[in-house]
Length: 188
Image 1 (cartoon, helix red, strand yellow):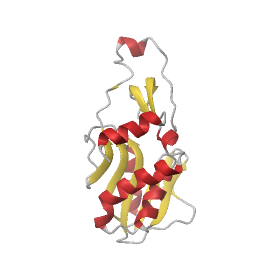
Image 2 (spheres, helix red, strand yellow; image 1 turned 180 degrees about the horizontal axis):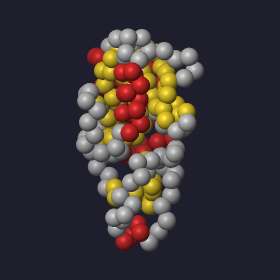
Image 3 (cartoon, one colour; image 1 turned 90 degrees about the horizontal axis):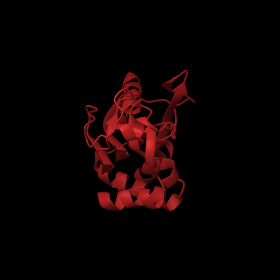
Image 4 (cartoon, one colour; image 1 turned 180 degrees about the vertical axis):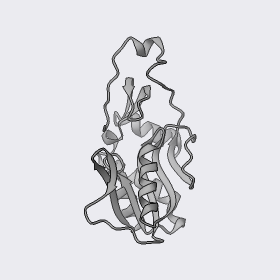
């Protein structure tokens, strides 16, 4: 699928929102990708998962790790398509941790999958957890790279849609955003 076709999937499913949004990073934006709206439909999950899996298949991934909540559905589908194990990290006392008896073996070949990346904070936390357990991160894969490729995780990264969405710090909002309250539609 082309990036145009991927963007169209988000538009058709209502997952690309327009307005004034406060992102998890604290930045403000006129656009928001609510991937959960696209990923509620299993044929869409299968299609997007297949596209990401095709990009990383040559790497020989043993395990896919996703940060909860956003990356869960897509990460699990990518793992299914790769016939790999799937685990996730989740919040505990405000930070991501590996729980539920999940283990990462030293040298285990890991792919981190997330739905949307803006600054990459949750992905970086996930990478730190994988490395702390001795895993070998092969790549990061995401549906939407809102940084336009500007985030560097120190490992190869791929996305289905690379787009540079304009963001603003809270103390430097343009007039149209400053005049309307921002909403937080995603996970916090």
